[in-house]
Length: 448
Image (cartoon, rainbow, N blue to C red; front, top):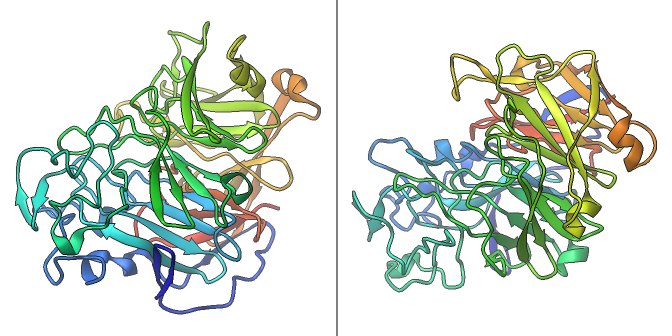
């Protein structure tokens, strides 16, 4: 066990860093799994030990097995010798887990817990001294129903459970709502993680407006200077040369109405309304697992068809970041994209009759292109999206091209959703990927 400030890391061993990956390959790495970190079986993490923690529910729908349900990831290149791949406790609705970070350290190839879990109940029921009260919401002394964060120093926590100064947000449905702010902008050693998710729970859990950032030096959460403008999950993207994070609502047909912007130096949210914007009959939605990225000076949003058998199954829309910063002249442009084949994953849990299209990741690589995979639907295929040469003006008008690469090595691990779990690691010059379950492997995907 090592301690730095308020961050406590539990690891089992050290190991040499992974070897450089082979171009065109998928390689499974990692010396342990997230399952091995179960805080319920850990007296340091579980104040009720050897009894179950508060996040273990009567119907056995929750706990560590559901840690990564609906959970995305963020890569923190400044945290550790080769960077760290981070996830936060998630699940939601009838399942939940503790509010705690799990970290994969690339250099050691080990998962570990970051900090100590606050014994919350993921908004399922309220627990008092370890005993469930099967109806009612958490009291305001423990949980803020507007911001959506827990007060670790509340005096009505049992003494052994209190963590003064530790005020974690409820983590249910974290999805793709993470962004990393580097140390050069955060003014610290390891950087910050920005978040904008919408928790859910058996008590509803909706309508929460909190925006937060996590300090990787101190292990403490901080609220942004103001509430988020709209109570829904955003997929955040960070723009380093402007020191802002931004995103659009990641569910439904109103993705194009507005862009939400976090000014990081002041940690202030604002909303930039877009008018006119694409309107019905628009059959391409942001569905659950949206994807947004930056290319040059463009903010790009990828939407999925809600029509069975549609060709193409996705659309790419873009807007100059300069328009968003100015707050005037905002206009979405549909990009001209051609493909030898399209990567997509059908989403039957949203509408089984239509098998609607879900998100695949598009993540920028060191060659300037963007890459995607379709998980187990095409476990040996990688798609490359090549922007047109030139500047932002030509990118808005000229043809973007999608081609495929056949990968060698392990099959890409299965998952229902991606939720930003495909992340670029500069130290390996490759992508990191893991599926949903805590027993799943972590993989390195290296384009040719």
